[in-house]
Image (tube, rainbow, N blue to C red; front, side, top):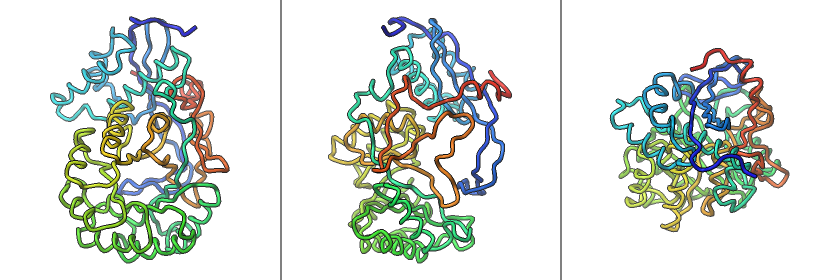
Length: 391
């Protein structure tokens, strides 16, 4: 029998800052690259109900800090019914306008994910089944790290070609290139991007779907030159070559290319901004991320919006919540598995988890966890032992 009944309330909202390790380095522009093992801090949000059940979600420490929990999250959640996720989300979202920018969508997402995790744990079911369970496995595409200047890494078109061959051999259903961006010394470069895309197409053959996520600050002329090269190479989609705040630039670009334009990825505004992109005919495939849209519910609404217009909606990034959304919709083709690099072991388990976050099987599928809740595989014993602060 599932534990809990309607009317069970939230009695505690807490956060832990804990030590863990990573083998990723971050460059001055925020892009990840392979690096030596180093200590980092991560944060965990925990919601506790009146029956002692708990729901958790990992988050950046900045998004679940003491002030935001005291000022916004606790006043909305404490004493409220656990199952009223949509009402709680709306009440929290309405506080954004008066928050002076301190209450962002990633905070909304962290809270909503913890609510979903709590609900799944109370009912003894994985979240993806609560969402409908359209499928229990999702085909994966390989998403590379940005280009670098590491010999044998992703420093040349030939490096990208060799890595793409390896990724396809591992079973990935498609490959997406993130090419060179600052602070790489020769970036950005349309010519180098075209050379890398051509080398990868030659290496994997004509039948493997390929995508490109290029420099986010190209001009219209540069984006069009690169897009026309992708047309010749038979690429599936073209992602974020320009600043996404200029919707008219994307409408202009999409109207001149055969390669599908996907977006927006980084624009604020959640569902409403994406509706405007559809109305403006600025994209051929809609794009949404669970953390940046405010959670599972907003991401599902976005996918359903795209479906109403006969469009695919691809999910940005990975993680258990993203997989849960993908399991519930029929107009998203792939799970984004990455970021990948020849010198980084993506499947190495970090100390705060009990298993790899998204292993791919021999046929290129990522399988949904049957663990109750989100199924993130958190090692709560490790996290408790390495906690350095809590609030």
